Length: 194
Length: 194
DNA sequence: ATAAACATACCGACTGGTCGGTATGTTTAA
DNA sequence: TTAAACATACCGACCAGTCGGTATGTTTAT
Image 1 (cartoon, rainbow over the protein chains, first blue to last red):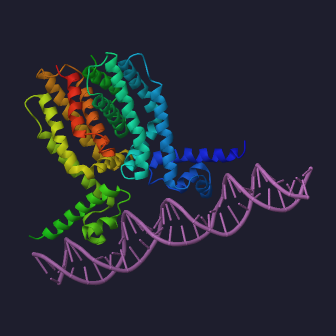
Image 2 (image 1 turned 60 degrees about the vertical axis):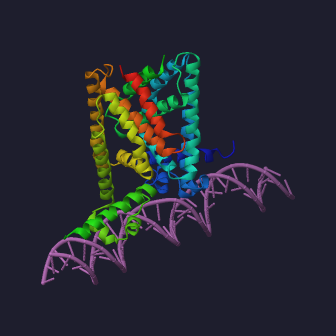
Image 3 (image 1 turned 60 degrees about the horizontal axis):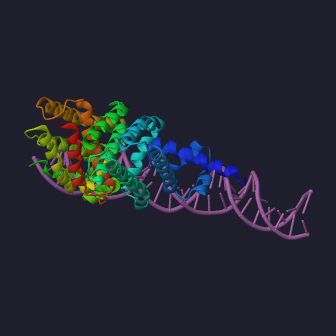
């Protein structure tokens, strides 16, 4: 394997970037900070990534791809079961990414202001919307859900999830968010299920 | 009128700050920018506000207070009616504050990292939670809502609202958000109402 | 085999510019 | 006249990105 050292440096920079961005935010995390954290020179940084924005984007892509994989693997027998199962996955997500969740917000905020980042965020985002829309349609087809506008139903689900995550970011100790997530989905189900 | 000029300058600075923060975000909006936009010198700025953070906080306070007023005025005969009426108010909120909504996200993000701002955000936020909790309890008492954990029910409502607003920020043209808001609340009601 | 030629990885001082905040001077209103 | 309101010049810190140069492989020609 040629230049495996290079790959390791790349990874170290990426790791450090996650830490610094999560801790201080995109603007406040300087490239110098990231380099110091990674134990690497600025030259190395710019050798591997053309700009600060580029590494931010790389990070985001990785994160979004991860979610994608996790979602695909959650499919169960019936649609309501799948949805409930997904909420059961939430605690793990929270625990694994607790300190990184502000980054999620950061992604969103940057996306709302930066054309490049927006395009990178909006595609997977719409993909999720479609995923849930199809899920709801399947549920209606299999008879476990009431006939309804599947698009709206999907948006409700996504909105609820987004809202829960963001409240979890803002006020982690303000509630038992995993319990709230489970029961919230239950209430939603009462409105959607047959 | 003695300090009327002073008051006007104050207001102009605040207006400009809203515009610049909304357009560029907290970090990217420089004090110089704000002053230029307000047609005022830096000396005037620092005469009226001790720091950049202070003006941001003042802005946030005003915004939160505004929501407070709007919420109190929405009360109708029954609880479900009140909630539906509130979603009907959303389009106005969206239209009036379209370009300022990213600031909402900015507030949130800053709050998740800055102790001072966090405290200023969390108090009104919990106040809303309590408002909705009481609203749900009233609904249960008046018999229009199913008996349920009022706290969780309130959190669902708030989560949904937060999620809808944030999706509206990220992807304004991705859906008809006011319609979605209305129908979402309807679905939720199916799960909550008797 | 091995040295020369080349390519990639990495270093860290430096630049040009920005920004929050301050010091000091001038105007305005009472 | 005097204090508040406002203006201007300036300071020190910081920061993304650059650049000349070095170190560490990798390929090529002999």
